[in-house]
Image (cartoon, rainbow, N blue to C red; front, side):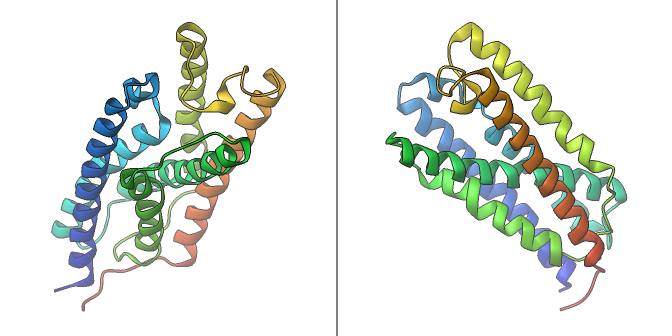
Amino acid sequence: MTLRTVFGWSRLLAATLCGVALVHRMFWGLGSQTIAGQNFFAYLTIESNIAFTVLAVIAGVIALRMPQDPPWLTTARAIVLSWTITAGLAFALIVWQAGIRGIPITVPWSDIVLHFVLPTWTIVAWIFGPGRSAASWRIVPYVLLYPVIWGLFTIWRGGIIGWYPYYFLDPRQVSGILEMVLTCMIALGIFAIVACGLVLLSRMHTTEASSL
């Protein structure tokens, strides 16, 4: 069995695990009977993990059928992984900030899988998985496009329904518009740094299909 095949099956396994975790997280949130639970699909972390699940299935099938990933798949993986890895970092920051502010927060196993386990594995697979070419630096603006559009829509929607998926988007939970804008700019900076890191790693360690 080739290492390429092993990583192909691992992509399908990661997609399955992510799908199961998403379903558990959705029903866990609905069971809480809160507005947050009822707005499950409003979270960037959830949306990015849905994209990860779909892409992991596609990438897994390609890995089992082709010796190398096509360039478009490397680009798509770099973009989606930038979202999910940054979402994991943001989630860790939110949990930490909640502790500082004395806000109780419960973290189910599905959140741990979505925000910590899978992002860690995807970094390992990105570096060592065979059949991946070097990613282009041109992915960085594409990585930023989604959170910018999502953020503008979420802020607009939050002003209408009075709820925001993340506290730093709510002017009432921070010192004001200035802090909200500054925090959003920092978040975009993290997205860009993660994307640049993935591109750099792909260029430092371009992988080839190999055998076990």
